[in-house]
Image (cartoon, rainbow, N blue to C red; front, side, top):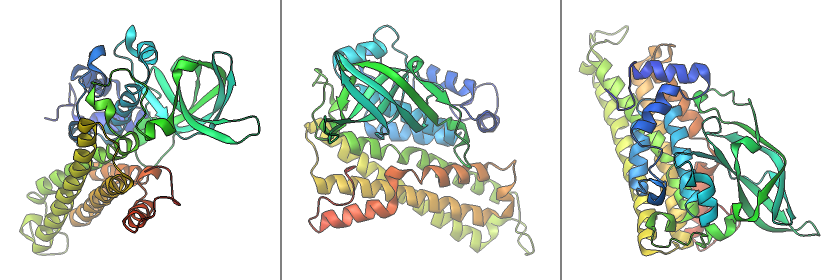
Length: 382
């Protein structure tokens, strides 16, 4: 039985998550019991402070039961990693009195922040805030401009979830249960200690005084990038396990094969899919190893290394997605029946793999340009 399973079958919980368009409370409770919301929280607040390889493995296993649950847990954990880079007072605000608090985020700078005495007045709308239905705090991206309206910094503010409104806007074909709704701030005050420069974090200039905590020395953007592979690895493994299991009990329509497992076409398909998944895992783990090593050595990887981490991650996600497509074709048209978990796995993978940060064409362009000596011209997210 999957570790997420409690009193009901995991597929029932995954279906409830989809139907309710939010993570089933049984799943949240199970994750809390397993301490999986603690994995990137500082040990000073009862966290586990694991490395990125471990984070990948945790989210991989969760996704074998429910893609939405894995995706949401994953993003809230990476938000805890972000907060671990902030100053002591900000961390105390989040975890000092309630160490089990969870954090959601949208880092895109779609709001506004006016500099005022003691902090910032913030307004705006942030779409696709995964975890906002289960978080007590939220990180939101804001641009900082001077009196002439010129951009001088791109920052992140930290606010209690009670300070913002949540609009029910997440209606999606896949990852239905993530509840990635729109967060709205209407002229809220954010004290100065709850602002951090995303550009400084990207350059390795963290705000935490606890420089002995290795995890929070990991490179900001590569860390945010590599964790996105975890749910895809689990979805692909779940699809492979399901198709292999069913291949021993069902035939191939309009053929003489009473069992799929006896057909060379099925044998070749599962071999191709398994190899794609193995390759996806190898690439993901190599990228995570680069991030973890940078944290250990307390260095910011150079541009080419960061571009390679991005390329490894996006290619891993593509391979995982392609393995699921291969498996669905091998399993047959029944893959798309409402009661078949393959159709949910397929939808979750297709949606999550289109996250803007893991666009495979952009990732390849960034890496190709880096190999040829170009370090600008595509995106700052490297």
